[in-house]
Every structure is written in C-alpha cells, then in structure tokens.
Length: 329
Image 1 (cartoon, rainbow, N blue to C red):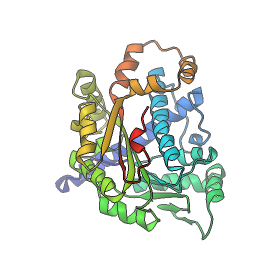
Image 2 (spheres, helix red, strand yellow):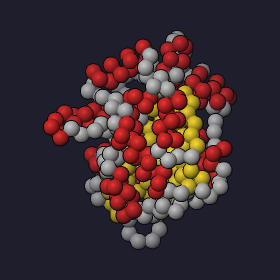
Image 3 (cartoon, helix red, strand yellow):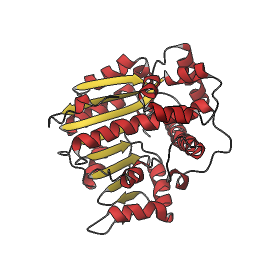
Image 4 (cartoon, rainbow, N blue to C red):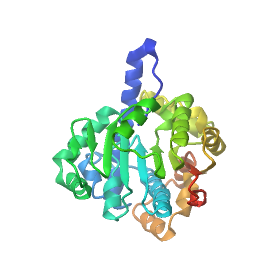
C-alpha cells in the first residue's frame, strides 16, 4: 500500500507511519482468509500467503470483505470483457492479493498483470511464491520465452510482474513498470484498495494525474473510506490513530461527491462513486442470500453503518471508444 507523506525532520515517525500502513496489509489478508474459510467466496491461494486468524471475525466484517472482493471483481471483469483481455492490469498496493491466480483459473488473464507494493511486502510475497508450488506453477505455466526473472525484490514473467516501489513517486513507479514492459498504448486498468487514503491529497492527486496522462485508454478503481466527517467516521479515524495509522488523505473521503471530484480534477473524463451498501445490494442476490445464511448477524444496523463508510469509486478515459464509461453495477 502507499503511505503517508515523509517529513524530513521526523524521519523516524515517517518510518513508523509506513510500518503501520504495512500492517494493514496483514490485517486485510487475515480477514480475507477467515471469510474464505467460512465459505463467503472461494480462494484456494490465500492460504499460502497468510496464517489463519487466531479468533473469529465478526459477521459484519466478513460481509464487508465479501462486498469489497466481489465489487472490485465485478468492475475488473467488466473491463476485461470490454477489452477482450487485450489489456494490462496494474494493482497498486496489492499486498497479498491473489487475483492473478484466480483470473488464470478462469482463463481471464490480461496481456500482463502488474503488482506494486512496498519492497518489504513484495519480498515476503515473492518468498511465498518461490517456496510454494501451487503459487509458482501457474506463473511458470503462463510464462513463455526467455528465462523468468525472480530475485528477493522482483518477479517478472511475461504475464505477471511484482515490483517494489513507493507510490508517492510517480517517476520511480513509471520507470520500474516500463522496465518490465508496461505498454502505455494498451488499455490499462489500475486498482487501489485502501491505498490513496494513506497518502496526502497532493500525493494521491499526483498518482491519479500520472495515470490519466500516461494511458490513452484506461480505468481507475479505488476502494476506501467515505462519509468520514460524521461521528461514526470520526470513531474509525480514532481507532486507526490508536494503532499509529494516520489517514493522511481523509479529507478526500468526506463524501461520494468529493471522491468523484478528485478523479475528475486529475484528468479523468468520467467518474462514479457508490457506497458499499449499494454495492452489496447490487450483487447477485442468490449468492448474497447464500452468504447471509452462513452466520447469524445480530447487528444489522452496524453492518449498514460500516458499509456506508466505505465506497468504490471508478473513472475512465476512453480514446479507443470501447464503451468503458458504461461499466457500472
């Protein structure tokens, strides 16, 4: 994930802030693994990246992750369909995400799938891939041509690349992506999940501008907090601050309108934003009914409050006239 801005006079505190953000990667992965173990969705790969949770996660947390995973997947697959997989995907702040393997299983791999994260997270992910054949074998199967590059900090095959970089530096990011054959002419989908909120508004604006100016045909999907100015939002902020997690970009998370506005102000042609309650209501209802039968949910109001404080926003630039602006829920 990306992280808060650096203060050269307080380098130690900036490093601590980065460390706290890196910790959110572990939290999200553990929550996803728990939800998978209960049966919310299938992911045979998450077990190779993260330990099983020591304690049960609350049903509203599991349903929240279900909506997040399915919401992102819905937009991603719509993009793959519009481009007929003749595209590239760049997951910024990917953590232990398993989307590459799941897309391969569904025969939906884009031309190339890139992941970028803090170098320490990348090192851990690559170590897991190297030491676990169920992860390494699919990469080898999708690879052709010259030898695959894999060292402690980088993995590069012809269809999948993992790169350690700081998302606060667009020039470093572009240089590393181009080194591993990012093609600016290809339709490109960029994904951030709980990443931009840890950057200052100026840093996230710079990243969004870079993406909008680098690719002619592109889509950006962002999942993060929203409606953070109310009491529930303030409690969320305080809880994260207690863990040294500073939401440096929270002012952009005041409303769905501010989320959309940021995208439009930074070079994107069309933008949408909806809260996770609406996403949850728009998912295939037969499956929603199935997962609602997995666990008893006592606190329906708490689930609604949680879901109303997270959103998915997305934006498009469509010089190839692929109809990207029609992608929705």
